[in-house]
Length: 285
Image 1 (spheres, one colour):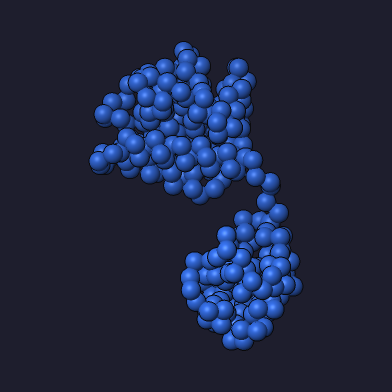
Image 2 (cartoon, rainbow, N blue to C red):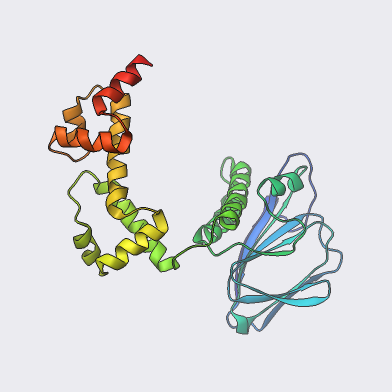
């Protein structure tokens, strides 16, 4: 069994503190592989709040006397003084992260991030950022560097924000592996947008067919790879027109066009007016 945790002031005693809106009291993780069983039962609950995240495997939570199997990607929220009864079994290979917190505005803060207060168990997905934020909090407790309490609060708020974002965004249209590949392509396009990019050659370099790559890219970003690169060029050109004194020909070269006249035609088609007209309008304003 693997355990890693950190506590405010090195005290494992739960506490209630309303001197600030949000205070992180402790954070940790359990990972069972060979250990047969790890039970927790607190009939009267705790005086603080607890949020648990099942990163992998599955766990057993007894809510209202009923055994509920909680699988990876789910969060479990306990409010103060609520019975806490749950068990981890080695055969289920669970990896669970938890954080305890208190404060004068906890309910209002949770509501602001659309975290349900009327549900003990809710699905939040399995973004790697969740586990990283828990690890960051554990490390802050253990190192106690300058400003670590503020950093703990920032990490917890970021965790709440990521839960909100994941829960409110539309379900992914592609698998996680495809999403990662498309994110790589997007990053590549942003770094090389002003260079000649052959989409077919790029797809081949990533060991996929051009048709499959284009279909997946449009699913994720709503436009074709060619249009996406064009949008980057035009948006960067617009920023240069607004913020620099470069000539239109110089801006065309910066964003990847050798022919300034061709660049001007493309810009007019995409933005509705010629680059020189746009700059003149901006100066007048």
